[in-house]
Length: 518
Image (cartoon, rainbow, N blue to C red; front, side, top):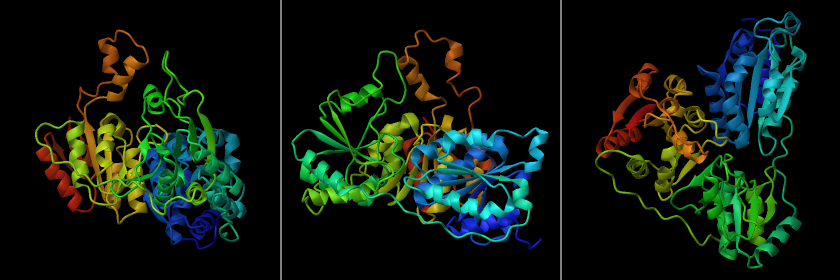
């Protein structure tokens, strides 16, 4: 290998210098100098993904758990386009990601070769920052800027375009990290105003997101609740939450708009802590999109770029709140079920047998409500849902989370329709020997869309329309698929079978898949 420092190696070393330890990659010809750099530079772990949506989803899962960015490596505009759905989820989750996209050599672009595209145009909707390496001499500086931008509160996708000649030409040096100012501190006047408002006796709730749902934030929120009686809420798909026994209970906002309206009925003040006011996920004929009660005041304690956990602690102090929360979730494990499996019985098995401090990369869709209800009183765990609503996130997020926290068991409860989007993640789990247990709920359907048919006002539905939501003919064989990707797998249809196979998966390390036939 040529030891001369080129743009790719200066960029890779800069990423290491800035604390980036993992690169989830699906490279092509234009990125091969950066691939070689990953071999030459110590300190960054390359992880091959068979599809760009797996790479971007894994970077999301890693960033949510590690609290710092991983890099991706994607091939030109079409490769970036393949990864956009999970970059959308990462954007909604405010996950730090350094998204490196290769491009043609600068002198080759004018030839309009088949893969030429508007990379920045593809990247713009999902990126908090976009930069381009204009020459190999600038690669290190742009890399440091990308990491700084990804880490800037509340976190986001920083897309760096790396032309092939900027990767292979000579560079001078790597760069060091740029300052990371961290989240802004909420002003004392805002804290004092919130304390006055919460003392006025109106029916109030705090809507928590981001750092406010960390253990530190929830402890402080529990103290505020003890002092004021305010309800503690979180978004339906809050990107990361610490849940389970011993934790401060937080009410999750329901999914459907009319459920949200009923859930918030009578509320007179909604205090946002790193969150936005709740709206309906979709528009429906004759149903509300804005779900906050009429006349309810909306106040901001902390905006997403501000330190919500610290703001809650400062608010608790301003309220002279008790030193500890008044309420904690009790441990209440369900009995193991018997007989044919449904979503409730499957949830009981998972809640009963999952060890402490597991990570749930959850995309259970229609099976999610009973699962979250059972897990609420189960052993303490971390919950990572589909933050942006784009399905096909669960398996990649599980892979990234397992790399970020290798000492913790990762469980991925997944609907079969969404799992089919990014099933290539199973191969990466096997290749990297990741400790992920995947539960595929095999109801052979896009079941949520059967629910939505009536909600959007569709009348009579014929056989052809129903067939668009049906996953029979042929039935997807998840055991054979997992085995083909190198993952041990089994199929269960009763509570007794599921309990035995799930207990075995919890007792061993490495990737495992269980197909739960409903």
